[in-house]
Image (cartoon, rainbow, N blue to C red; front, side, top):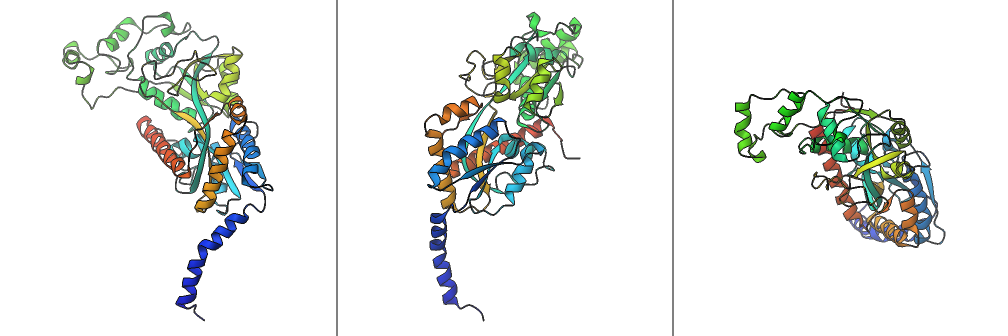
Length: 395
């Protein structure tokens, strides 16, 4: 028997009331907060702090259990959550790698749309990436390190905690932006003690036309051809001859701790790694921080300048943690969870505990603001992948 038009209309009218009743009864069982990384890292610690502080905001009997589902730079956990019911009982504390850089650089390993396949709830926290060198490195400033990379294309090595991760794309972006940064060749820091300087002729040629015009591994143009664009200043250079990115060999490791160990041993020249991984090594004198990727200096290390300060104007790439759920989460549940996150972050010593884990608490965000933030971040990472020519996982 076919349902009548009247019964269908009655059911449609009753649907909001049914949803409201379900939302009122929720949560009736423990909520799972999935961390797409191994236990003990900054995202895991942040999840446990958040779960502890959020649960009471959801009801006297509410419980949030942290579940680790690690693998593929966060993609395993994210993909698992994507296929769960959108009922508010499965959440994902995602990272910039899981929902930002990996989908941009490794599309075959991340078969999900980071914006459309999830319901964004709230930003939890974040922090800068640190440009760091071994304690024994001759480089005391970011400018000196970048000058050395420019002077020895392809001969210096840099490490990150994984191909396609936030550190990797930050490093690629740094090489792109630094390719147009004027060289400061004057000091001895601009070259490593165990690497002789390039022949004077090759260095002078690159300086006459400005670093934007050529890499040192390219011979200088004849003087006559060089003078024409230079007389009008750097703005007069042809638009089809942009500055070339710096060249250095990327060495991916399995996690931040492995990166910092390799750095301390001098196995690589520099690294771009999240603050949570670098802070203990910088404090203990095992590594030296040269710059941070945020627009402001970090309060933990106020003496370390920003990349913006050294001339890379507007340079800002930060890592972040974001709470999301499977796509289709009812808006009332998303708002309830978002309010609980905001209340948890504002409570007592939550901010201090997160900071100790290397996570700076985020400003309060609504689900709509969180979605807009994620869309902008994904677009930024995809642009970096295009500009850098990163082709990981596209074979």
